[in-house]
Structures are given as structure tokens and as C-alpha cells.
Amino acid sequence: MKTVVILTRAGESARCYAVEQYMHRWIAAGHRVLVHAGTAEPPAGDIALMHVDLSVVPSEYAALASAYPKTLNGAALDIRRRRFSELQLRPGDPYHGPVIVKTDANFGGVPEHGTDSRGRTPVDWGSARTLDPLRYPVFPSLARVPPEVFENEALIVERFLDTRH
Image (cartoon, rainbow, N blue to C red; front, side):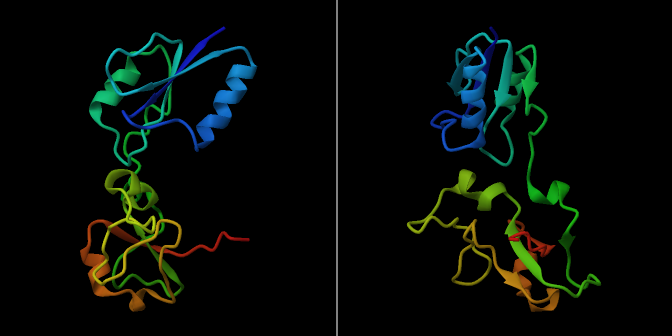
């Protein structure tokens, strides 16, 4: 029997994520699963799963994860879209299809900034509207994107790939 330690931020839970599905499978396979929130007094374990719900994992959590013999997800310390997007566009790029405006931060920046009463991230893209992390705005072309979007470091414009079907 192995002990799996799921590392989360203080105040976070491993619930409501795909991680919960893994937890059930590991327990069914006879492993012990512990969820540890924060960095103080971590339990011993054979393997850790880094599950800090932020776009950039704080260094103290990376250090904590490295103390375990093996760590899953330990190298995913910065998942901001701008670091890995191959779809990113800038004004004047030679692209003529639809585009989507997203936040650089994961899931609309909600883990970093919280949400308003409607569940939207408070990232403002230059007008009275805010970005809903489940309904990013799509524009018919790059030329139709408001200029203030490109001036906002919290936002990124990408080619739109419709994956609904």
C-alpha cells in the first residue's frame, strides 16, 4: 500500500475536480490518500500530487512537492496561456478567421481574483463588460477586436477553434 498526498492551497479542496476521480480509484486499489492544505506540517507519503489551483504555483508549494520521492504535476508551475499558446494573435497578424479573447490566467483568473455575484471574473477588457470564464467573447475577425484588449496584459487573443462538436 502506497500513500498518495494531494497538495492543495490552504482553504482549497480536492473536490469538484478530476482529481477526485483519481482519489476514488487509488483508494479502490488499496492506497491511502491524504489531502494536505497549505505548506505547514506535511504528512509523509510515497508520492505527491500537486493540485494548487492557481495559474502560477507559489515557490513554497514547489519546494514542498520536491520533498516527496515522486511528484505528479510538479513541473506544471506556470500555466498562464501566454507561455504555451500556439494560437496567440497580435494586431496586424495575417489571420482572417474568427478569434477568441481569453484571460492569460487559467479559468478566467477566477482562482487568483475570485468572481462577482454572477460567477464572472473581474478582469475588465476595457468596457463595462467582464469576461465569463465559460463564455469568452468570440469576434468574427482580428480587426473586430477592440484595441483595448491588446493593451490589457491580463488578456490574450487567439485563433478560435470551435471544439463544441
